[in-house]
Every structure is written in structure tokens, then in C-alpha cells.
Image (cartoon, rainbow, N blue to C red; front, side, top):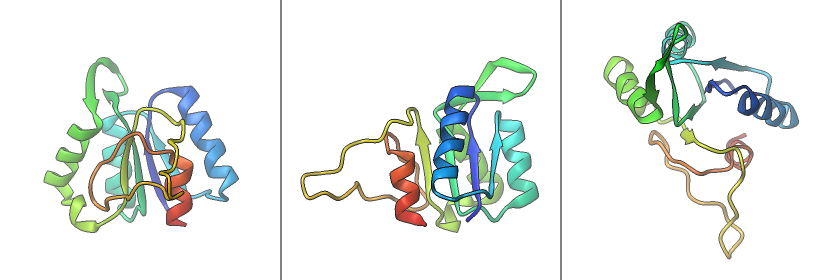
Length: 128
């Protein structure tokens, strides 16, 4: 499994790395801004999952120009038609897991669309 993580907050990156280690996932790339994320995608393309922050810098030298996860997806769809690939994509603003519904199931994940407020570990556990 190959994962692209777009996150600029060091505490979240550390927590995501811990989750990856717990799940035995070692094939992932962390991009801290839109420019690096686009380069990572261009250079690697075959990601199985994309985990995006809600907001991150557009470039590494500019913290005032912000890109949202949704803006990034629109740009990537325009440039690479990524939504046609049918890969799970989630926009995360917290790494705190949500609770399962009364029947014990996690929410349905939509392939090729962005979703929010999903526990990253639970999402990955359903995919791997």
C-alpha cells in the first residue's frame, strides 16, 4: 500500500507516522505543502490512499498563501483526473477517531471523494 500524506503540522505528522507504524505501513510520503504534494504525485502517481490536511501552505517558502484540501483536490482533478482513479481520499482536520454507529460499523467511505472527521487509523484498517 502506498499513501500520500499532505500535512504541515509536525504534531499531526508524528501521530500519523505512529499510526502507520502500528499498522505496518512503511510506504508513504509526507508532503508539507501543495507544491511538494503535486511533485510527489507527479513523481509517484500510483497512490492507494491520500490523506489531506484541511489547510496547508501552497509553497514551502510561503506560509501566508494557504491551500485547502478541497482546493488541492480540484487542482489535482483538473491536472491528473485523480477522482477517476477511485482511490480513497480523506480530508482530516483531526486525528482523533470518531465513534462507530450503534450497529458498530464505521461510516461508509466514499471512493474518489473527500470526506472529513474520519479516524485515520479506522479508515486505513478498513482498506488494508
